[in-house]
Image 1 (spheres, helix red, strand yellow):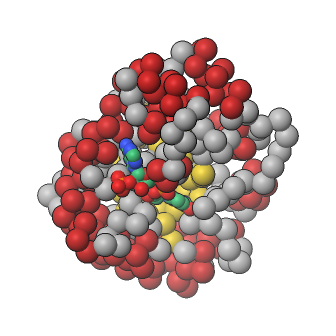
Image 2 (cartoon, protein in one colour; image 1 turned 90 degrees about the vertical axis):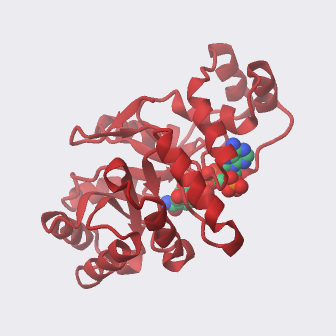
Image 3 (cartoon, rainbow, N blue to C red; image 1 turned 30 degrees about the horizontal axis):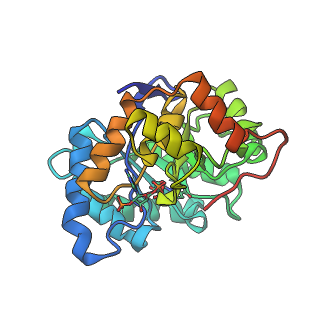
Length: 276
Ligand code: NAP
């Protein structure tokens, strides 16, 4: 699997694993842990979670899934905006560390922008980094203007911006993705298979048929062709994890990409960043 470079030169696998809604249904827990472990075995070692997911239950599930494998994985977690202050971020991070059963979070993100001044959040992130509690920090759901303000607030060490981006939600291509590229900062694409709501007919289905592939694999291949993007599908079964991993083998032709552009046109003007 190709790797994607963070601004400080460290690399992470291009295809990782999401965990939103994991641990929601008790009966699926064992399968979800097995799915994450299968993904790790396949090299999808970047795992994305958040204190918000199940109010800590997803982080606990991740902790269980990576037991004995901690040094192989790159854990991403996120703090609520209301916890992004000098006083609260440290405690939120400690709670996440405890649930994850680890001594360090590899990449700690601000889940979305809230009322805490960015300079204060940057200072709090840098404090956690200095203490060895986190290795990198970043943001999520930040539009171009937010990124500009973050940098103006001393946030040039931001490692990534995790955003909603997939074949049908391409607004970021107009301004935000070029901005991040200019700053050598990879984006992390969430909801890459549109939360499983993929159109059974139309251009994706035609391309999938031609490749003997699934709709999800084509949606992932569309994103994985970019070398500056980390892609984090959530899959709650071993079958889905294996299927998603095989998307790495698919190369879409120029003709197929034009077909996608015709149905899902790239943006021609700036629109506000969408979020889920
Ligand atoms: P997603 O990854 O696009 O879709 C997940 C859904 O697609 C699940 O229902 C899953 O079902 C299904 N799926 C996965 N692989 C499949 C396959 N091969 N074939 C058919 N269905 C498949 O959506 P997401 O969970 O919203 O986004 C991914 C991750 O990004 C999240 O889990 C979370 O970690 C992160 N995220 C971040 C934010 C943010 O604000 N920063 C927002 C949303 C998401 P099964 O579970 O049954 O496999």
